[in-house]
Amino acid sequence: MRGSSFRARKRTAILMMLLFACTSQAQQVDDFDYFLADRIIIRNGLQALLTCNGLFTSRRSLEQVFAQELAYVTHPVGTVDGGEYLIDLERRAVAVGGPASGPVMHAAFREGIGCVVMAPNQGFDDIDALPVLDLPYPANDPATTPWPMGDVVDPKPLPGNVDPTALNAASDWAFDRESPEQVTLSLLVVHKGQIIHERYADGVDRMTRTRTWSTAKSIATTLIGMLVDDGRLELDAPLGIEWLPDVERDDADPRDAITLRHVLNMSSGLYPVDSFGMEYATGSGLAYWAGASSVDNARRRGLIREPGTHWDYENYDTLLAVYAMKRALGDAKTYAEFPRKALFDRIGMRNTLASTDRFGDFIFSSQVYTTARDLARFGLLYLQNGVWQGQRLISGDWIEFVRTPAPASARRGNDYGGQFWLVPDDRDDVPRSAYSTAGNRGQYVVILPSHDTVIVRRGLDYGKQGFNRWDLAHEVLKAIK
Image (cartoon, rainbow, N blue to C red; front, side, top):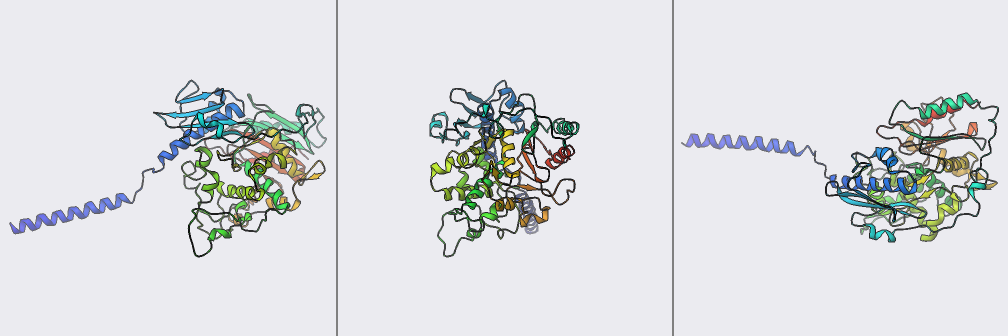
């Protein structure tokens, strides 16, 4: 009996060790998505905001919104025929969600701003508390004002150095894509200050505003550059912001070493919260699509690298620079009006809306709605070396900064400057002096100083996307001698 008891205890011990080993091994495989609730909220908020802007900012039909704007959304709620969403035409607002699809998220159009997404605990009754921009437009009427300050474009023969057949071939290259996921909405080519080619897809025209996505970053750096030129911000000075969490410490916060140059070069050294599959679970996704503060979350990241030593593409780096811009401007009214007064109104960007979070902070990393012509005006300002109709708006020094490769981008081909993209080292078929904005779903403004040319391509690409702006530039330049 004693031997039998010993053997039983031994078998039990072995089984326990095996069970412990299996359990320990299983615990090392973390295959549960702890952020699933966030992802559902963000999915619903994403759909609410894209639908709201599609209907009330872009003025597109619901059929167009579901076919193109929402083609980007994984598992959208409902269909064009209905589902767990509500469109309030009177209040120009959208709600998405319900018992089957998760928390209801709301977005509402606001004058002068575009649509603003709300927090999960807010609804239609909270719309009136959202920010607006009540700022009169300049007196000139774009419908009767010549290009580029207005929209009157007199038909002119193409310049002698432009081959019309090659130009049309480049246009067909942009629109007739082999990939059905690449949907070109518009193509506009400006040469020597004049529009020489303008083409739109069905259902789109020169007044159709669509989202810039990260092309907004290049607009942000322009506004910031104006303040640097004026001496109100310093490129190589610390950002001088209050970091979160606000904790007592005996020494300086190591994040105080981060400069404006670092964040504009995408090399802050802060933890990359939009990477590793978390873009639509945490980080800027909560500000873009779920009503969280874009400023607070941007200041919560910890430092993991020495600033300036590693390149990470992060929306929050841009938003830290925008927050520094807000602090330099001093008060909420000046900040709210600054993009219009300093830039948009001065170069004729009358159809551009810079959107904010629900707290009134600009989401200048992505949330701008504008037209192809307005982006062409923006590109023309850079092509003219920062001078607009005889008045300097941006210094040559700032343009040189945005066109200079960020030191930390060397390992990836020196393809990034100061919130503008540069021709990578491995491209020899595009002039080295070219530079470009770039936004998700195919938003590009390509500036080609060597050929006195600006190219604007707007898209609603989805899925794998992959439209190549340097290939487009190569095709267009075949037409310009």
